[in-house]
Length: 103
Image: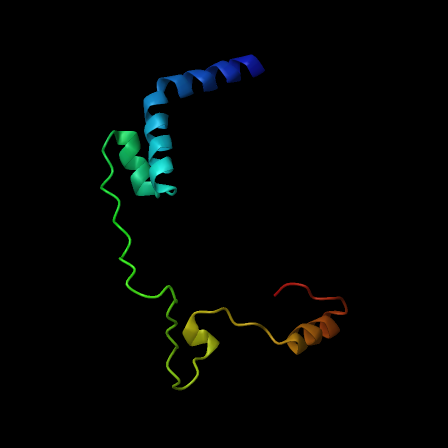
């Protein structure tokens, strides 16, 4: 049973060796591939040229952009999940008579 699986895997890799070679070469050049790029390589399509990095005309110091100092955003507006108050957990535990771990 193990050798049958081994032979099947070896056959799949052998049948798709050219695709695997294209993927390996693209990873060497780009380091990262997304799903669309992998699909293109599997279909035999050439990848678009790599976009050059922006030229570095500064002194090597990274610029930091500070957020607006307007009214603070609530957690609900920022898309972050709301945390429940620990007293809500202890109230539920007191009502049920056992520790409450999940809401």
